Length: 88
Image (cartoon, rainbow, N blue to C red; front, side, top):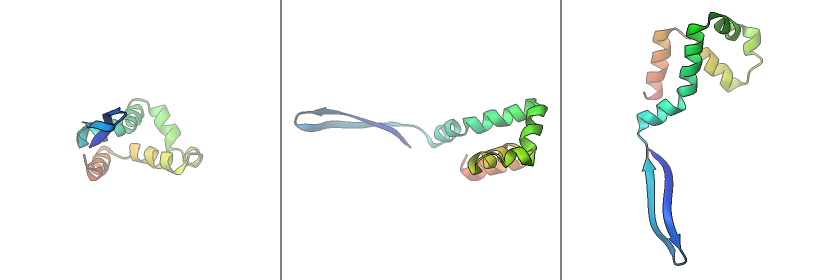
């Protein structure tokens, strides 16, 4: 996947163009790092997990954060299945 473009420009126009490349696996891991961190917090801190598992607290969150919280609260096998579906 292309990460960033770079190039050399002078008064006559664009002289050179290049790009930085990042693998699909690294791109997905970087973007999912927050989800992995939240899941780890739920695994080691039962009190925090109980707070996020409360439906009243979940209703205060926006739709995207609600989906992330519910994903992180899934059992291990289901969580890994969702990540495999995402392309890991």
